[in-house]
Length: 92
Image (cartoon, rainbow, N blue to C red):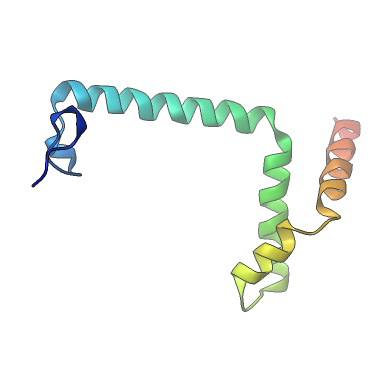
C-alpha cells in the first residue's frame, strides 16, 4: 500500500496515530460548533430547508432530484424567504 502524506498507510482510522486521532476529534468538534453557530445566525438556511421538506411532504414528487432542482432555482424563492424572515421578525 502506498504511503500517504503524514506517514499514513491508507484511508483507515486505525492508520492514524493517537496524536492524529486527537487532532481529528478536535477538528470534528470545532467544525460542528462552527456549523451550529452559522445555522443559528442564518435563519434563512432553516427556512430554505424546512420549506423544501414541507413542499416534498405536501406534493410527494416522483422525482425528488428534479423537484429539488426546480425548487432551489425558482426565481421567486429569495423573495419568499425574505418575506418569511420579515414575518417572523414582526411576530417576535
